[in-house]
Length: 375
Image (cartoon, rainbow, N blue to C red; front, side, top):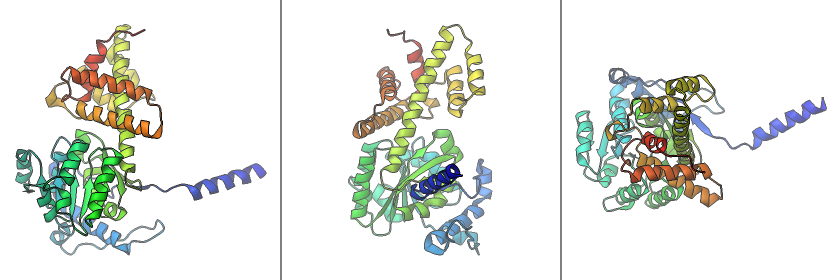
C-alpha cells in the first residue's frame, strides 16, 4: 500500500542518516574471582593479540566475524601491548589496576600518595615516582583521577604526562571531568605527538572490583581499538562516542541522573515512613515494579543498615556533587533547564556542609529525612 511504502522510505532514510555509535561488548566474560582471573591469564593474553591484529587492519569488514591468530606461546602474547601505565589509585583506580595485573598485564603505577602503590607492587606492579616516569616506561598510560584540577596537574604540571609524552604513546583518561578540561589535555598531548582517548566510566566501587564498568570512549579511535583488551578486563561494555568531549558529556549526563535518583529515592523513603507506610514494604513494592533498579537495591540496603560511614563508601559525596556541578555548567552552556539537578546539587552541598563530603552519596538521606515540608 502507499502508506506501507512511505513507512519503508522513512525507515530507510533514518537508517542512512543516523550517526553510528560503536559499541563493544567483551568477547568473553571476565572471571569474577581472583583465582579464576589468574587461571584465565593465558586466554586474556590471546585476546591482546587478537585486538592488536584487528587494529592493524587485518580484520574482516562489514560486520563479518574476526578470525584472529592463536598464540604460539602465552608469555609472548601477554607482553604484546608492552607495559601499561596506571596513574591514580583511589576508590576506582586501585581495583581497576588490580584487575589488569591479575589478567596478566605488566603495569607501572603512580599515585600522589605513594603508600597506595604498595599493595599493587605486591601483586606484581612496578611503582614510579612521577607521572612522567610512568609515561616514559609505557606505550599506553591510563589515568583515573578525582577531578579536573587533579587531571590538569598530572597532565600539564611539573614531571607530568606531557613532559614525557612522545610520538606514538597513548593516554587513556578514565577520570570524570568536563569536556573543556578533556579538550585541553587532548590538545597538549597532541602537540607533543602523543595520542589521547577520554574514557570515563559508568559504575562505582563494586563494578570496578568486578570488572563490570561501562566505558565511554571518545577521541582518537585507534587508541580506543588498541585499548579494547584493557577495557575487556575493566568493563562489561565499552562504547566509542566520536569526538573528544563526548565521553565527558555522556558521563556527566549519566551521573547527573544518578544524583537525582538518589535524592528522589531518599525523599520517597521519607514520604513513605512519615505517612505511616512500612519502609521494607516500600522497598518490596519498588523492586517488583517498573522502577526496579540495582541502584535502589544497593542504596536501599545502605539506608536500612545505616551504612553512611567513610569506610563504607562506594561513590563519595564530594565526587557526586562535583559531577552535578559540572553537569549544571554544561546545562548553562547549551541553555538547558536543569531544575531537579539544581535542587539535588543544593542538597548535596547542604550535606557536605555538615561534614559528610567523604561519606557515600547516600549519606544525603539522613539530611533529607530531617527536612520539613517547605510551602
